[in-house]
Amino acid sequence: MAWRLTLCFLALAVGWGPAMHAQTVVDPALSVTPVIASGGPVTRPVAFTFIGPNDLLVCTQHTGQVRRVTGGVVSPTVALDLPVATANEQGLLNIELDPNFASNQFVYVYYTRAASDGGPDLDHRVDRFTWNGSTLTAQTNVLVLPSTPGDNHNGGILRFGPPTSSTAEQKLHIVIGDLNRTGQLENFPAGPAPDDTAAILRVNPDGSDPTGPEAGPFYAVAGGNQSLERLFAYGIRNSFGMDFDPVTGHLWQTENGPGEYDEINLVLPGFNSGWRRNMGPLSRGQFYSAPGFHTFSGVGTYSDPEFSWFSPVAVTAIHFARGTGMGVQYLHNCFVGDGNNGRLYRFPLNLNRDGFVLTGSLADLVLDPGDPNSQILFGQGFISISDIRTGPDGALYVNSLFGNQIYRIAANAAVGEWTLHE
Image 1 (spheres, rainbow, N blue to C red):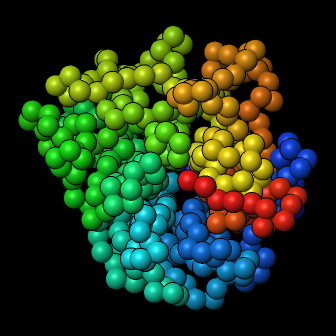
Image 2: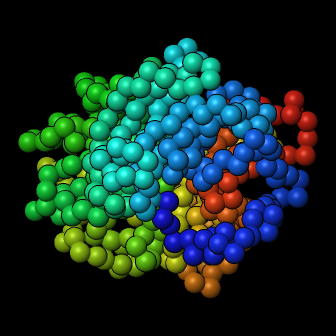
């Protein structure tokens, strides 16, 4: 992903490796250990998911491969190999298990399709595969999404939810960036009609649009098209993170600004994130080219981000811890990663879990130049974080895109003392 990664690229170019970047966390009761021990490296891992205890499927962005890592050992058998475009932020971008994976073995991936590896992009695709115990087979297309040749802001995060619903009721949520377009979904009312850009889309597991009581917030908009029927949120510039709060069922998302104001957003149905009208809180007045906040027959609501960085850090993954592998005090905490600095942040939620509680210079919910980040900094040295997950053991796992490694953060205690929660 072509984030603002000058320092990381420089470090790798001069031969520095992960050993030069100690992975540390602020809590001395926790340990950080690498997951991939042998059979690697797994080059440019961008996302991963667990198919069992100590058993992962890992996406490698620019090879288009899914590799299996079991007990820290990379399998010599490639689980999946897709032809992907590799310009800018393109590639194999995300992986997600079906909520009923235990029974149907379905696995979903998001990728920038090309005729051959490194070729020009044809489109973005969400495809479903079946795990047969060693490889991903039975490729079925779920959704075809637009691309702009050689461009960025591809998004790609996949999440089923909300987890507060039964597995049969959960929908597939997909985030895609603006692809540098200026349509109605980017808040230009006179621009092109909704076209599945700058959006979070919500579909059934087979890619069809939910209907009836399960229909999305824009489904019944007069004169709407299929893009509106599956639209959940819009006005999104460039997003590398999305997760559901397992307590409330609410969706949260991270978003990259162009030069100022990276964001963390609470995404309620019909949310308008504001791009290309603004980034950051409205009170800061960081406006761009769109004339205002566009709605679709009155449907669509802008709200300020729950937190912003004035100086972008290339905010990436967001994850709500679902286990007590780091201690019960971290259960359901909100963790966020960045790409520029390899930092891991922890945000304290209010009682309603719809915002953050910060004090002092961060009470305005903006990290400005000169503000200390000690209230939110949880770890560092992870060399560009691109994914965060809770493992079956209840520990927190952090993906290092340019460190070619996944790290496990856990308490200095026996595994048997930990539990996994939803």
